[in-house]
Length: 437
Ligand SMILES: Cc1ncc(COP(=O)(O)O)c(C=O)c1O
Image (cartoon, rainbow, N blue to C red):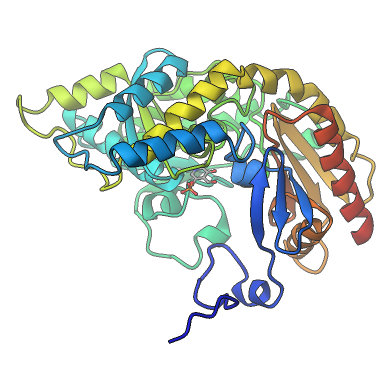
């Protein structure tokens, strides 16, 4: 069969309108720094760090060279009962920026795998500590925890669930934290902390001792940047403590500086028991995720088995892949040497002010934001999500990449962005809003 270089047919694309895309392709053929270039030579500024993956900007040579060197030296070894030095160095580097007492990191290949792995760690830990009755998980409306079956079961986004009705049992959802009074509030809303009492009600209804863990994103990212109200996460932590329930922060988006601190946990001054991460771990260059746990969790699970036994029957063929570890180490060095988290913190107010300049646009329904992350919600038109989907496509041709979920744009530029980059992102965003007005 001849190879048709112009055929787009064979790739069934993820989270995409395949028929529409193949009729009107939008290909990116090059990326560097804050920019990408499409197949027609047009330049786009990246307003969402791809999918919140590239805080250090695209095309970092340090990462490419580290991966190349690693691939020449040792391209692959499994991590079951053997290892390579890179995974230990990367785990140590990640542990250094995690809150105390998080000193143990389990590597996976994506955010979705980090969620599944966290669920299994919860089960292993509860078994090891003799709490066999803790069979229930709590999550939240409008949550996104990836696409594997555990994460879909925890999800609070209808489109991610309705096609897949066979999910895990025993999952209870709290309400999301967005309320009408919070509209256009920059940073943490000062109302809505009482929504944490949903967890207390769930404990009273089901029995706190039956709940294994509560999963929350510190900032719910994929439903459009729902920033936690002041006091909300602290109250969730208190209720978990009262009932001995594990608290899991899904930091797949908020990890690695997005909030201006290494993790959302530090930004909001609430320490969970387990933290999931991915995306910016390797600056998006090689797929990788991880789950970090408090020392007590690692020790309880490992000490529950006889010496020499495998303590946790879980892992992936590509867990801690040498190339991913090399990318991760090079990325963490960049974050540290270029002080990118501090840079994100410094740039945040300029970024949020620029986003808030869109406030009076007639198409804008709400603005939300924290750190280097903002949600711009537009008034729906032609059915929920139709305008957002069209705007995302139009932005591509207007020289801007922004990720939309439904009618909410999620802006999350790289931390290497200069002020003029932020201005360019917002100007191009406004131009597309004007086209739709
Ligand atoms: C909070 C959260 N968890 C999990 C995931 C899934 O990550 P991945 O797409 O790498 O599987 C995402 C992806 O956006 C996410 O935002």
